[in-house]
Length: 534
Image (tube, rainbow, N blue to C red; front, side):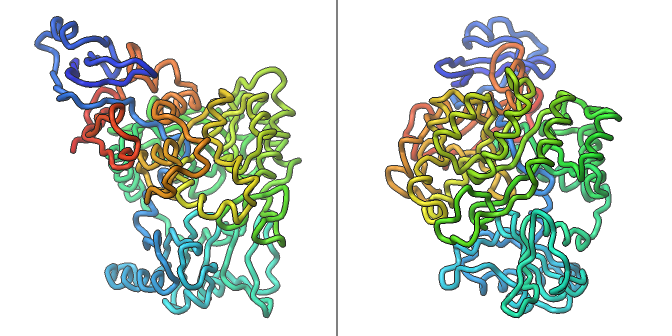
């Protein structure tokens, strides 16, 4: 069966539009004018009148936690809370509305102390004890790099003043030297046993549900970091993705895989790193964490934090171990994608990459987030041809804290979306859901307007770093395809490319940029099949 989409304003690539597409077997067969393509229709063609609407390639989210996003929807929603009291109220309301969850470990995500109006501090065990001391409570900060728990959690896990700290992480102590319930970076792994295992059907239902939500936002491909190879939970999630891809998937998956240790990576390589792949479930880069987040002051900086000179953040992996991972991956032609936010972490990663990239970055190694930068760092990206995985939506929050955290000088060269384009870097945009939401148009808004979602400041935050609309769209389509080695058949609406596309409700190429965050998707097509309509 063929589909003929006509009477549209179809964006193919910068400066190039068409009005009609002919699709066959999940790929674009022809592009052209309505008159040209309608003249060759036959009885086997399904006609879809686009009614003049704008059509874009399906969005490719270059970095998020897809399965974890589905799990986050099942927990206490803490985003936007403006006080600790509000967090406690939301938790109590969740317990009252979910009697089946009472007495079990309670999980929540999304709090941010910088939004607390009267007491902007991290939540501690005493705060969460106000909810309950009878069952564990585990509430993650929005960034996922800090987690706060109640006293019952510490009791169950046997964590006390003499418990050894964790390499690449820590649990905080109060003035009396006792754990205060705040866990950072690698220490968060101590909490993993608290979550009850889900059935295979429950996991599949979650993945199907988040796919439907992604389709509503025009997302047709994701590059997701959910699986830690070598862990029991990682194996279960990996099996869920295999099952999902064998049914009726509506999102293409490209995994960013963590490994428990170097031996586990070596074993995976020996058994076949890419074994069991298909078009909807592919294995991509080795994923490594080097530091934490800016908001939690765990991002690794070269100099002490401007607003807390006692710390430079946390280094989650030493350079010697990092080199070992990168060398093993590169020798086996495996891509590497490394979480690095602070300028200290980014420099550490660039140094390690420089050791293995002799002439060209053939495996397309990259850095995820790459937020705090200066011109020498950005020039090193260019010299080594390092892929930049960028989340413009982070500006919504970070523009309000970055000058406090790192000082005005360094802030002015950070989140350097415009400079990255001027240098000709390979850039791929993403949401990092569930850290931020799945609404891709919020990402575009932050990239082209450099404002928060309340349209502040009027002229943009360091407006010289704005990009144009085409650049933002390309970085969400072509850029993502490059990151997954698919740029020759994904990310453009041209003959021979995958028929993954979206129809939107506003003529974005003919209107003011200020309206971009209000755009809604009216239809999403994956593999030539309509998977969402509004």
